[in-house]
Image (cartoon, rainbow, N blue to C red):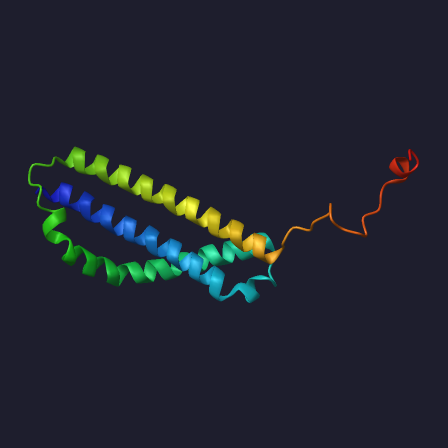
Length: 139
């Protein structure tokens, strides 16, 4: 396999591992430290969890990517006929798909987190609901 194509393939694996670890770190930080995020506002909480997840994923990808690349080395680098252009296109497509899945995962985790932090009130069933004066006068 060409060195350039191999570089693209390694970059693809490392990017996918980084995005997976980022999603796992974000979910873990959200669940484990749920009580601590209540003290911050919604924007500050989200930014703090994203920043912490980036740091954790960046540290973890350094050691884990070497292990995974050694495990999949035979299957991932067995195609000797792949051109650098095809390898680059595969890497861009794979990273794009992994990024899309990561973004959707973060949005879903944040939606669940916000629903648990501030559950919606059931105004239709509330006994204390007061009608505006113009509506009350029509009866």
